[in-house]
Length: 313
Image (cartoon, rainbow, N blue to C red):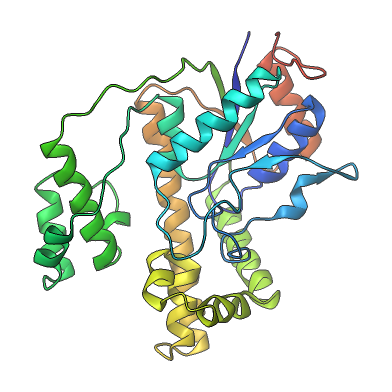
């Protein structure tokens, strides 16, 4: 079999980054991140960058699309697809089969299924018209455009207004054709049983808090980044910012954040199963396997690889 890309996906705390880095080391390849929040500089602990995982055998495995945007900006799937194609093309020109690794299903699927996307500008008039509406009202408006498969778009008013803005733009502007390469991808998923996943998430959250995740939030706020912008990023940034602002006590914050991350991981798996229904074959590996065995299983799926030209190239 011949592949242009190997994709490693899985829910948060599944160990996908360690596997991607180990594969890249074995293949003399490089990793392209498919995570919607790891693009932001100085947002390290809260996004779980785990940069130590990229050091394998004393060598730092090259990675891309991490630390490419400033906090407070709104990176999106169109920008990801554009940036992915830029890195992917350069790596393929060098004879490298890249490894795409991440847990943001929409980003991964936009590449694997070749979504044709276009940028959506801000609509100041629409935003003004929606500004006084409640989150419940905004959710109802968004449902008029599309079926809501999860609650991500209506987590906050700002997210809901942006989602409506995008749908309104697409409704008025026919999607333009956009060239996208035909990528032959091997897709590998890390399958973690529910109890193990929950235990890993809780332990990882405690470790990141002990490592100074709250200090990271305070530094970002100290830079002048509005609290609403950090809350927009959700999960750790939402709940820790609200704690810093005095909206929650520490224990309440921890419980709410822990529950939110568990729910997020469940939504990730729901998206991945949906990808399978939409025609993407995912080869699932047991997360409990030793790292070396996971690498070997990918090697077999790929048909064997060595050097800079893996997967039968």
